[in-house]
Image (cartoon, rainbow, N blue to C red; front, side, top):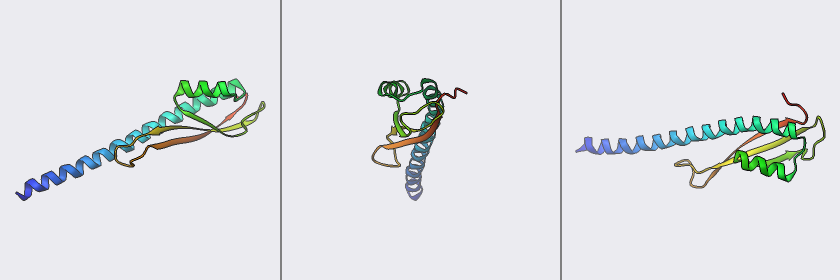
Length: 113
């Protein structure tokens, strides 16, 4: 009888650790996705040259992220623009409410490499 109770308890702990692992993997995937999107967005900002509302909306709709300009939001040629992109994630076990995963990147206006 005690071995059956031990087996049931171990399944509970294994399922909790499995759920935690899924959450951690999902967060890492979202972070990596945001990092690659940040590189593409930096190139587009550098190529476009300005940060107007229509350009920000096109970035948000195409990449499915939330774009926030942090500094130098009306840049000139050669200026550095600092921005953050974020995405929300509803975890399984880490938190009850949604989490926001965000990265901060820079783009130099007029630098295409």
